[in-house]
Structures are given as C-alpha cells and as structure tokens.
Length: 406
Image (tube, rainbow, N blue to C red):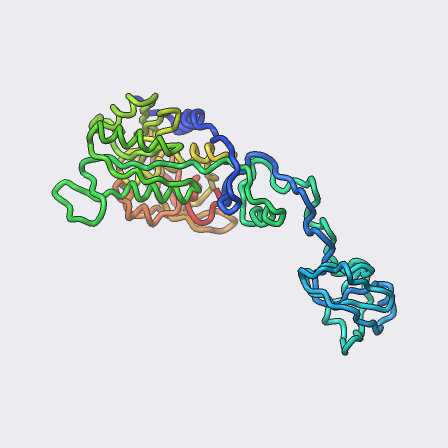
C-alpha cells in the first residue's frame, strides 16, 4: 500500500465530519462551546444609572466652589429602591457602590473627598456632571450583539449572558466520543499479568485527550479479539455517541477482527499515512457517525488522535479553527533521523526562547511504545524527510499543552 500524504488524509477525514445539529444548552454547561447563532441583548446593562464609588450623590452645580456643606437627606445601598429619594439644591445622599442614582443627582463625590458629621457633609471637590456614575446601558443596550455566531464561549461570555438573564444559549453541542480498546493481550486494572499480557493504557489516555479537547468522553471498555464482541461494543457505542475512537487492529499484519467488523458495519478507508509514528489509520462512517481506527502502540494512538480525530471532532463541535497553530522553533540540539519518505513527528520539550521563538529538545525515547518518554514532551516537532535538523536550525512544531490556546 502506498503512503498517503498527511494533508490529503486530514482533508478526507474533515470532509465527512460535519458540525452537529445546534441546540440550546444550559448556560452553566456552555463554557468552551461554540455559538451557533448571534446572541443579542434584550435589556440594558446596567439596567439603571448607578454609582461606581462609595460616596455622596450630589448636584454638580452645588460643588462649584469647594469646600461646601450639603445636607444629607438619605442613604442608598446597593439593591435599594430610590423611587422615594430625591436630591434637591444644597442636598446630598450617602450612596454605596452599585446603588441606583437618586433623582436630582448628576454626580458622585467619593467618600475620600468628603467629611461627614451627622446630617451634614463637607464636599472638598468640584464634581463634574457624570463623575463616578455608570449610566444605564453603558455596557449593553437592547439589540447589541453580545456574542456572534462562531464564538468560543469564555467565562467572560458566560458572565455577560448571565447578566442579561440568559439561562440557555444556542451552541453546537460537544461531541460524545466513545473510546474502545481491543485486543486479547490487554488487561484492565491492577491484577497480575499473565505471560504475553500488557495493561491497557490507550483507553485511559484517549479518554483523557477527549476530555482535554473539550468533548464528552464515553468509556466503551475493553473488547477481546472476537468479531461478535467488537461488533456489539461498536454498535452499542454508536447508539449513544456522536463518534467512536478505537485503538488496535489497523496495522498491516494485524488480525482482521476490527477491520472485519468496521467494514461490515460501515464505509471505511484504510490508510498508510506518510508519517512516523501513527502511520496506519482507519476512518469512515458507521450509522452515519465517524469512526476513527487508531493504531495500537500508545504513542501512535495519541499522535493519531491529535492529527486526525481532534481536528475532526472540533469541526463537529462548530469550531472554525480546527488545527493547532504551527509555531516556528529553533532546535537547541540536533534532531537526527533517516530518510524514509515520511514526516517524523518527534516528541520534544518546547520552551520560549529569544525573539518569540520556541526552543526545542527531543525527549529520550522516540519509540512508538515509549509512552513514559512521550509524557515528558509538550510539543511535536515536524521534521521533514531527510537527515534531520542541526542545532540552531528552525523547525515547525505543534505545541500540545499549556501555551497554545487551540
């Protein structure tokens, strides 16, 4: 089987992963979701004129020649009803931050610039009209677009929508992603291993990647190398999930259990991608839902998820930016490789360097089975076919954690 270019395979996968049908979700569950339509303000924020300071509400004209003495006629706290409070000539109202402005007043003098004694306050400052007053609708007015379509909701967006009384918001829902491991050699849990057995790390790692990426993980468990068991697990998962991720059984020479099941249930394609690791990939649709068949080696499965499943799932979730940013980095030491016709995705530690460039060092242990070494990396260096990169040479990297917002 000939090797397929990475970009060609990614494009083929994305073509079949359309955004999920939008729906309204509870505001408390909307963080990180993508809005499916513009959301407008239906009222003013703030809803009334209020003070930004503790102090005294006054008529600015009464403070022209400070110091001046004014009679304190009332006190207003945040949440108080100001309808029976009025500031006349020569009068002031003691007022707390957030309280509504009383009628007649057009400015606030902060308490630090006053001296109060009983029912009299001495104003030591010439106030201008509007001083420390937050006008009604100063933040939002009816008809203003609060968040546009395609916005990834942040905590600030959630707060703004709450300030308008929204309980639900129209978004593309988070894909529910089922994760299934297959293989007779796999063991789940801490029980002693028999000869030839290994513990299943792929499922835990992939479920964590799904959650970290902002989707809803669904644990479909561990299936043995048995067509019926794999078919039951796949069908059960797709009854409740929007997409499915399996690991194992997609490489040349693997037993045909996963291939046989997926080919019977849906329309699958089997690629050998021109990358290392994560060369084998199965992808297609079963019951109209995307299924990603990832390789069984732990590092390969995680890299494959990053390159193929994550962008596709982001597109299903309504994101317009589906791929991570490719940053330019400087190799702090040589990154060696041999020509083989593939793009090598070298696990590296990236740290900020001079002039905004990242500096990268390859981790020890680049084997596709060396998960402990890969756990120390926070980026993938994209090393093209050839002899590698010499120290001081530039190389493209995908930053996977901590410093990249995608």
